[in-house]
Length: 225
Image 1 (cartoon, rainbow, N blue to C red):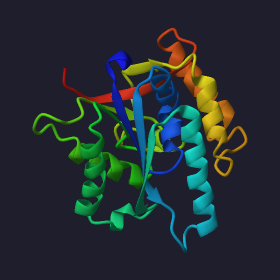
Image 2: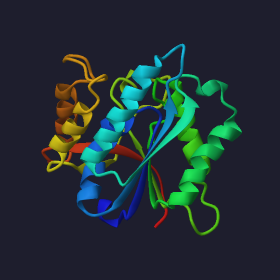
Image 3: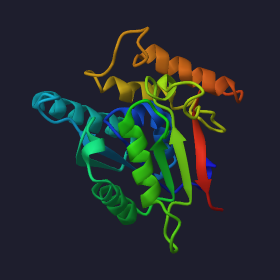
Image 4: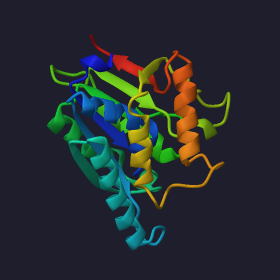
């Protein structure tokens, strides 16, 4: 599957979601010479978020993307943890404009049942942007898992993340760990899930499911072949 990807776009609700969910896949695609863009849909705004901290996190994201080999980063201005107050049309249009401009063949999006409501709203906006209309739309949409969000949703009451696409990142796991390390303000000590140990362990577990040393797992939302 990954060999067929030429242009990928990763849509992240918040800075670091893209690295947590598919940093290894981004690194592998970049190493293959493929074009990868990242969209960070929201930014923190006062009074909930300190302006200096917001600037620091955005700078951390850009450093992480450089480590992974991201070709282009888009920072949108929707307010973090407040997407429920943003008109759906505005959110849809903001995501759709970038998808139309970049023309990715593959979209990586957050899992719709993640605990953080921003993730679900970004998923829906991405699906609107990727509607299979006309001749140019993403042929493949994959939902990634984000530690401390995907796995915290209420069991049995919301859809479970049951992956059936696995990308071997055995040769790129260390690059993912290095990229996450760029988020000095977000890294936590183990046993917090947002730790180096947890990311490494999850990649090893996902890899062992398919007899690989490390992998990232996805739910295939749609593929047009």
